[in-house]
Length: 453
Image 1 (cartoon, helix red, strand yellow):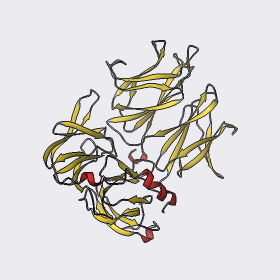
Image 2 (cartoon, rainbow, N blue to C red):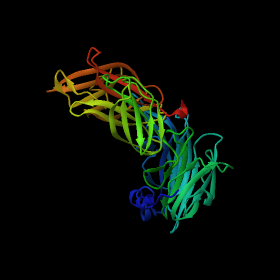
Image 3 (tube, helix red, strand yellow):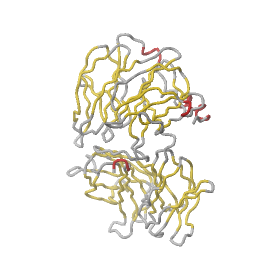
Image 4 (cartoon, rainbow, N blue to C red):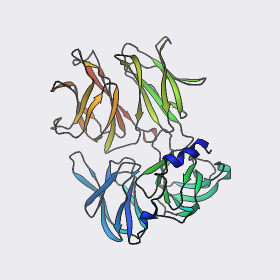
């Protein structure tokens, strides 16, 4: 249903994303080339034109749109492997057309991706916009798309188009204004996707790519709206839930359980020992109050705030702050089934070394035969009680946590044979552990959508 606050906010916050480029694109002897990365398990993929690297895109993103004179050009798509060597995925010829964007959609399994070239006009008539839907969800899938205007309800929506898997893009002219998009399986009235109410501007062309969400919803779908700019606007399903889980890193409290409260509704978790993750609990997008309980049900912490968005997966990490006691850190989990590279969320809970306060550390991911000075996979100066992300290749690494003391590098932890070769992404927690020889430890957790498990 239409969100009245969204109507006010959208023109201010998404004007740059959901709008056309205007008169600058009116040259009649030039056109554009751009790539959308819809390959769910792909690494960052680069666009080359005439052997010149132009820009790149991660999954569900687009490259920069590049302007060329009309004519035929050699185009290739490449990525960097663990040895920083360029690997060509595909090469082809593309004909640049006047006042058009050749949008190349890469989809499917990155081991054998599919490339589909879409021709998209760079503008539309005054008072109207162009809109088309392109389905990359999978073979044998077909959807009906409905648009609703004023009240934003499905009952008043009209059938706009149908989209079979990788079928030809059918762009239609539509009046500028607010729209709610509904998607059903072909021939069905069961709504499997509903967008927020979005304002679509005139003199623009919108390609709405229907893809698997690879998030918290089993078999869920998401719309990525591509326009004549360098961004994708992700429109999430308005009925999608989020999910939360928790981990307690304090050995002094074990076992424990947690609860999440909004208003008078309290949702408990299962009971877990320290350094173990609870099961996920599914919740509506909202802000919540979080509490932790000991085995007897006594409240150890209360009223920690956690905010959850739709389709978001998050973990609440409970730890001890040396100055403030028990605290909780929220870490967003990446669930895409990445195969060639992985996002690692590094969490630093290390407070001290040999009686000295440690305010930050460096974390190095090194391959066999590679030194900390050689590697490009570095989290540089991650603060205490903070988190940072690092993208690593699909490899087995030795990981070092290093503290610098007056110019001397001290290895707090080194862990060999850390395996980052499974689909998905990872959370790496660095913390104290008196039971180990070094007094520290690393804990690695993989995160991935249930849709592919």
